[in-house]
Amino acid sequence: MKEIKVLGTGCAKCTKTVEVITKIANELNIDVHVVKETDLEVIMGYGVMSTPAVIIDEINVHSGSIPHREDIESWLRK
Image 1 (cartoon, helix red, strand yellow):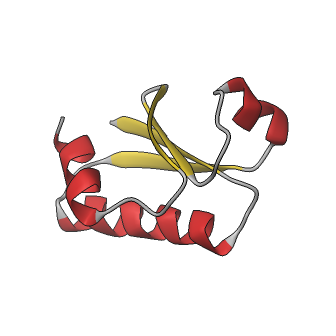
Image 2 (image 1 turned 60 degrees about the vertical axis):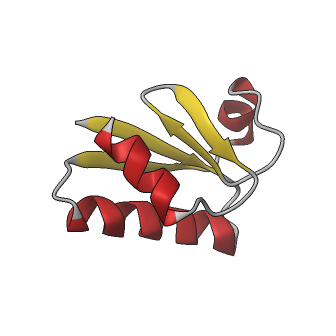
């Protein structure tokens, strides 16, 4: 199971990112654990300067916008 963290302060883009990743994972029947992280200290610990950021298995794969479907699918299939 992939561990996915969406880092952000709770803005609309951060919430939408969680929803989109969860929806696509369900459509692809891929088991994921999505966590929404809002603690600024944790976010800064990843070196993230713009949110939402997506961390998959402790690797920062995206930050600054809602990721595109194609990107999410490729991350989930790896």
